[in-house]
Image (tube, rainbow, N blue to C red; front, side):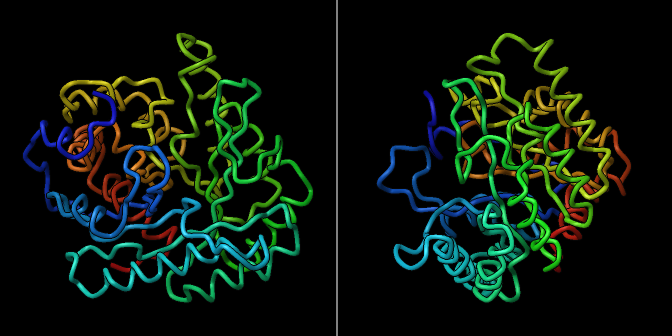
Length: 341
């Protein structure tokens, strides 16, 4: 029963573990893709509120760009401003308290094309003007792979964007303006990120989804080689003090798990056991003060519920100290995104 939706997820029910632990969820999306044939075509304020109010103490969330609600006219480079305007409105609605106590989209990350180089500055100014109190930075996805069966989801389809002079010039503008960059790529590209992070050392960078691990298609059934390459690349990135890592994204089918195909959704005990080797390696490399648990909802929602996911995070982190867990569940994200909750 692939992508079974809320009724399917409801088949697995659990008590909330450690319900008082404060959480800042640093990665979710909003979108309305009703014309596309994808799981969870619409994920807006009501849907996220239902998830964050499912039992855990989610104090705040961070919206990450999803290429939704772009403007349909005006200069091409300015069209992503529409998404930030849209999310600013949802955040204001959340602040009314009508949708529960969580400060939803307390920080907002949009998109700007860093390949514009110095010319990206007016775009960043427009994004900030659309959300003066919440806008924190951008995500410019650079996912690329030479194998044709691997989906290329980069914002501006090109190989080696992190290495280009124009991209780096745009990144320096981002740094000068006090903004951050979300880094979303596939694991073979991690050495490029390490080189880029060293070239722009004053730019705060957040590595998404444990570094883009792929275990399907050309990377299926090759764990010895694939995981060795992922570990080596991740360790190189972790040497850069300006990079933090997000612990999540493994619910996406591209990580090679079967969770979305099960008749009954996975429970937190098995989920924690499956996630732990990946998460613990990231934490070992970056340290808890540069690591943050993320939901990546609704993308990861194809594999498990929000409630089960945070139960699993709590299970797999139970061996860490209280202060280390506080960092990973809340404090690292609150510091990086300047969230007050």
